[in-house]
Amino acid sequence: MKRIKIIIEYDGSRYHGFQAQQNAHTIQEEIEQSIYKLTRDKVSIMAAGRTDAGVHALGQVATFDTDSSIPGSKWQFALNSFLPDDIQVLKSEQVSPHFNPRFDAISKLYRYVIYRQKSGHVFYRNYSLYDDESLDIDAMKRACNVLQGTHNFSSFCASGSSVKTFERTITFCRLFEQGPCLIMEIEANGFLYNMVRIIMGTLREVGRGKYPPQYLEDIIAAQNRSLAGPTIPPQGLYLVRVDYPQSSRDGS
Amino acid sequence: MKRIKIIIEYDGSRYHGFQAQQNAHTIQEEIEQSIYKLTRDKVSIMAAGRTDAGVHALGQVATFDTDSSIPGSKWQFALNSFLPDDIQVLKSEQVSPHFNPRFDAISKLYRYVIYRQKSGHVFYRNYSLYDDESLDIDAMKRACNVLQGTHNFSSFCASGSSVKTFERTITFCRLFEQGPCLIMEIEANGFLYNMVRIIMGTLREVGRGKYPPQYLEDIIAAQNRSLAGPTIPPQGLYLVRVDYPQSSRDGS
Image (tube, rainbow over all chains, first blue to last red):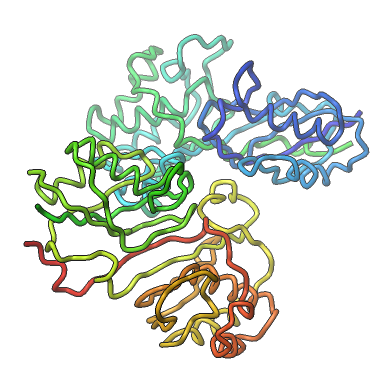
């Protein structure tokens, strides 16, 4: 039995999220079906992050175990020949059978895209949030700085979550403009449920002048979801990259 | 009775082209339905160019006649409130009742996009042709130059076309790289059926080294469709802009 690690990009528009579920079209299901078509084995894949409906990925990581003789690096091409054209494997390799894509991850990078121009947004409607109102970008950048570091982020976690601890370390949170888009990139050692979308929703409220950047310190300190901004829609969100310690990259 | 001119952008992915037809979902039908919802009048709109299934527009132009009291400039917002989110009116105005969006056009600008990078193409699959092979861009640029000017373009016209003359003037045809994309822009006083897609298909053959740039002179001279390259797929094609003489812009 070998463990195969794949790096996947997908357009989440047509899917009810990553994770397999009854009576819903999911990315996990598409990948497992492609593996089945190749090997006739019903495997379960495990992913680094379970993205929600409409959320995209540029570098999702998943693993599965197989007895197939297909070499690790060839799974990329084998799977792509069966996958629909909105899911693509960018890389495949054999890894240690102890490698766990979710628990071994040391950091993840997410991106959120707001499209700020009237013309052209028909092409970005599934890939960004459209918002052409005036926003105080400098204030939003200062708010990003407040978020960086190790904090209890329970104010930025959707209710109903059953995690053990709300403490996370945001390595960086930055905001920049690129053409007609306003982009936030945020890297942390882990994210709570809906954390990126609530952070972006809160940053937008800062941009609108609803509260000053420093108020994010109070929101963090309150540990109360109701103080933060709304959960912003999913279609602007991308899982960009998942990082692992050097050692876990070794195959075996 | 007033004539209203609208400039429209649309993502053509979901549609069987612009022109209304039985048992097919078209952009014309969506716009006419939106006008009907606003006015309860069944109008026929006329467009500058009838784009094919899968082809997009950044600046399609269309007109319709109405007795409605909605001011010309307000039609933009009125229609957008009923249109699906992949069709958007960018501008509306009242024009002369003699203005004809198709026959008054003095030039049209089209763009064709080839996506040349493996990663990211899941997001461009409906908006470009994916082709990551090596292409001789300089040779393709020289071929663009050969196409410029006034020629009989019957070698670049799909069969079955019933036009009176195959002579057209290409004002410019240029090729440039932008990020992961190779883009052709072509402006002419008119285009034959599938002309842009056949030109791009022919330029790609030049890029592959199948024939030298100067061979396009022979293709033009032969007036024989079978000598030019294949009709390249529709999803990379955009109607960018339609231009009119200054005088026809006056409302009345």
